[in-house]
Structure formats: C-alpha cells, structure tokens
Length: 106
Image (cartoon, rainbow, N blue to C red):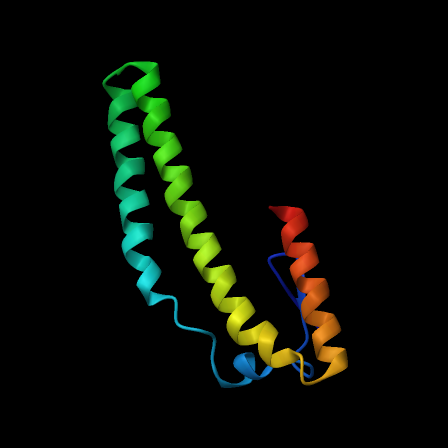
C-alpha cells in the first residue's frame, strides 16, 4: 500500500478515475500562478520594509487564492473519484474514510 500525503492509496482498490487518469486540474494553474506572483510581491514588500497591514492583506489574498484551488480540486474529486466509487461498497467506504482523513488535515 502506498502512502501519499498521509493517506493510503492501494493500487488493487483504486477507483476508476485512478485506473484511467486523475481529473484535469489544469484550469487551476491561473490561480496558482496568481498566488505565486502575490507571494513574490510579499517577499518584495518585506524586503522594502512596507507597512505591516499591507503585507497582511496580501497574505490574506494568497490564502484565499490557495483555498479556492483546494475547494475546486476537492469538488472535482467528489464528482469524479468519489461518485464513481459508490458502485462498490468497499471502495465507497475507502473513499469516505479518505475524505474524513483529508478534512481532519484542513
């Protein structure tokens, strides 16, 4: 059994989406790139000794952008991988446990 990000992923009991391929998250790259740009901006702001509140506002915007990516990927996971697993009780139970573990980490 493989462990990825603290979660067990068994090759024998992989859901159909894992057997084919993972859902496409390419659409999230714009948000990720925006967050990276904002983070570079925060580095500059810190180096320039900018006003604390301005830095904190930028950090809040970065956190919001990353959270939006998380939510969108989770929605796709639920719609694709988890929904497909409901055809098999064992796989369904595994996916539900996976989501529970994931939510504990949020």
